Length: 277
Image (cartoon, rainbow, N blue to C red; front, side):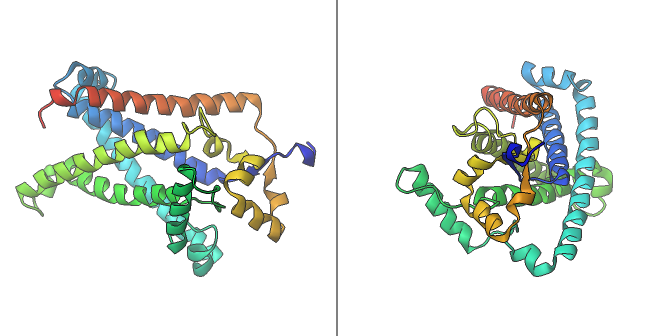
């Protein structure tokens, strides 16, 4: 492989891709099993439940995968703390590769909005855009709310020893509303912003390949590429395109996830008036 063949730039590490794949698969399972129980009064919901062994089977899988998600979240926290200790607190939290939102993200949002409206040039984005930082921290919020209420609801007898009965009713509605918001964000905003926008249609494979096209990065994330060029790191970040069979696997995996999400979104909207809230 020659240097000239290295037309892509590494964007995600293998560990980041593994965390994303784990979150993607578990989120889809939780969405499907949760909607199966939420829509159990409809034929659509009953069909979903049958995929998981029926109404009770969907609950069993929902609880088991939920516990697994909480454990994976704890592992991610430990991994993030390890990276902070290795890079240093200041560099890890405020460096250019940090996912911590800052005042610059507000300016970036305004500039990006102006570009969307055709009023200015594309803003010079760095490694992470403002929407990617939002997506990252939204998972923290969601895991705390959904994980906390989910654990209370999964063990109602034990939970009733520490909170009143009405507290479980509140937990149920908080869990349901937060789940609906999370699915709406992923299946509408995240899917369309990341995969279905014109420049990356039908799918942005960066999270699956681990890399993105260098020229695309120059156009969309010029501040990141300029920073790596100035520091001399760009050469070490360049890589070759993945082989054809991996591209096919990544395409099937990514588009399959999008298709499942859109199926759940459309189905839930179509049958929303037929369930008892």
